Image 1 (tube, rainbow, N blue to C red):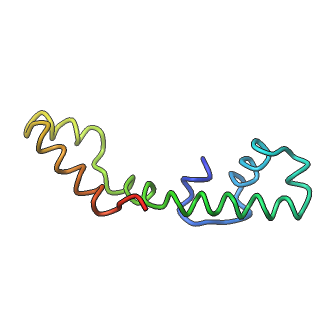
Image 2 (image 1 turned 90 degrees about the vertical axis):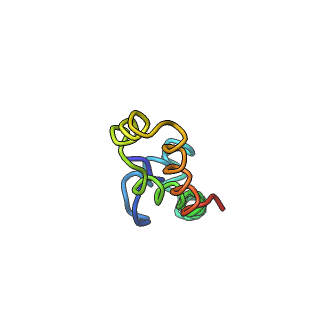
Length: 91
């Protein structure tokens, strides 16, 4: 799981550790000061992507989207997608 996909932020989640180690290295994770700084950066990035997590749960499944296109056309499908995007706008 990608740390941006976490439903709630947890400093101890293994994806946070993986993200810090992959970006900055194990030595930065082992250094408490650097780890704290990197966690603050990751949390800020995570909070900035809230709209993506919210949208993901409201979008119809791909199968339902394709069915919508088949039965109602692309223009109606676009209205469905736009409603979700309008409900959870980018900041």
